[in-house]
Amino acid sequence: DKRHGFGEYRWVCGDMYIGEWFEGKMHGKGVTTYANGNQYEGHFKEDRRDGHGKLVCVDGLTFEGEWKNNMRNGQGTLTFPNGDQYEGGWWDDQKHGKGIDSFVNGNRFEGIYDHNQKSGTGIMTFANGDVYDGDWFQDTMHGKGTYKFNNGYVYEGSWQ
Image (cartoon, rainbow, N blue to C red):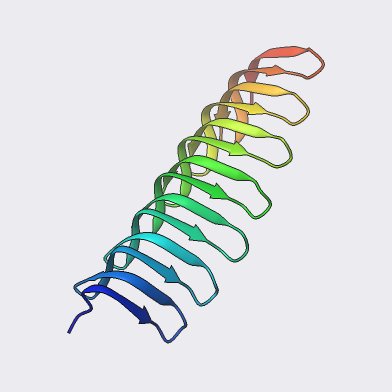
């Protein structure tokens, strides 16, 4: 008496799933439309998002990429309602590893993230033309780096 194969299920809360079932659990490809209007289409494993999938939220936020245990894990792209975008590595729902943050204001960061923070090496290109290429720690320029100002001046040295 467990759901198995392909089918549709609606919860009392208003969520709905259409897709593959295995031993009573969402497992394989499917689409979940949540009561709030958000929708996930992709792979499931034992009732959790797992594998490649795309989440589209009613506020305009989207994520497409790899999931594990209901969290963003692996490679993926997060696009915010205002157009800002992060493309790169994820670990337990946090930016982690190599990634690129592109902002609608013209700023762009390409480098290493550690638990949602710039950490390691990276290049920040600012909308005004300034460029910092160097070390980062806890989201700040920290360590050795070169800052090239848009007026031609250059500072090469240490940052704290």
